[in-house]
Length: 178
Picture 1 (tube, rainbow, N blue to C red):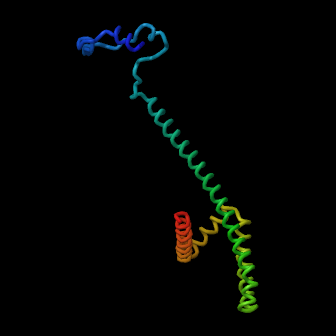
Picture 2 (picture 1 turned 45 degrees about the vertical axis):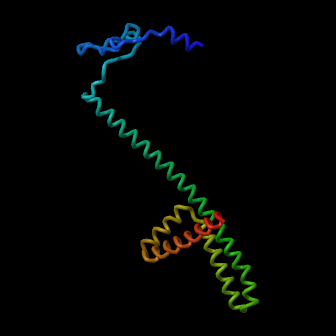
Picture 3 (picture 1 turned 90 degrees about the horizontal axis):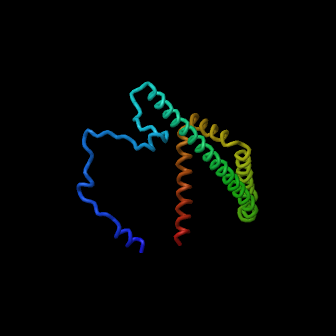
């Protein structure tokens, strides 16, 4: 109902009402705006002060980038700590499985082969303990040192780990789709 009243009271505009201002017209704010504390003068960008604003902007960007790096490093460190905990848990479980299997190997193949399984379980458990005792930074330093000393071994290990991860991910996707 109110819309109908608005339409009835609207005055229709003509093309003369929408004529552009003359070319020599200058903008002068209305009286209330002049006294409102608003400055309508354009900033002069050619003064020496613009260099400081550019420097301030660059410093602000640097600060934001540094903050972003810090946050990313903290998040990566958290993921690395979580991964380290999962790896030590998996190695401990593998060690336990090898220890349990050693008894069956004793029965089927003999005590000597069972001893090999127990020895392997002890080494896996020792490796798990060593990883658990080191910090993420220490583990990264050890990895860098390994790459420096023998890059071919590092490439081989990376390929092996990549193969195992691809198999694990592939089997997980297959199980999910089934």
